[in-house]
Length: 108
Image (cartoon, rainbow, N blue to C red; front, side):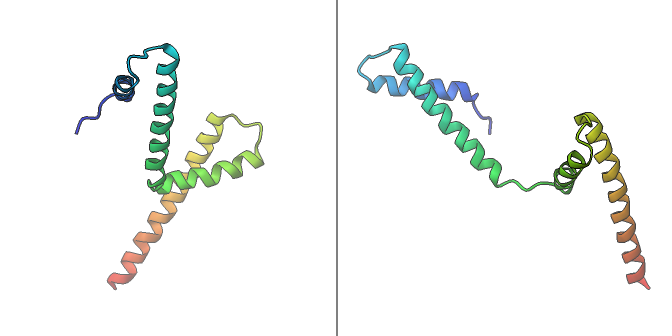
């Protein structure tokens, strides 16, 4: 399903509301409705995001970012992400080795 541009949706809703306003097409009325509808759309978007699960990588970055910021506050974001990326690579390799060890043990 193709979703309409959110701005077009807002304008369509405003036009529907203005039909009920008995011809009052002042900028003030339009802006009030646009703000109201924009706020509703933002809240809907937040609600949709709440249901999404983070990937293992996202969770790892979130945890490590706090630690790295505390231990190295002068690091730039680029340096932090490079450092965390290297940590993730090591962690991922470690987990994969453990998985392969577990599989080879089970086969015996």
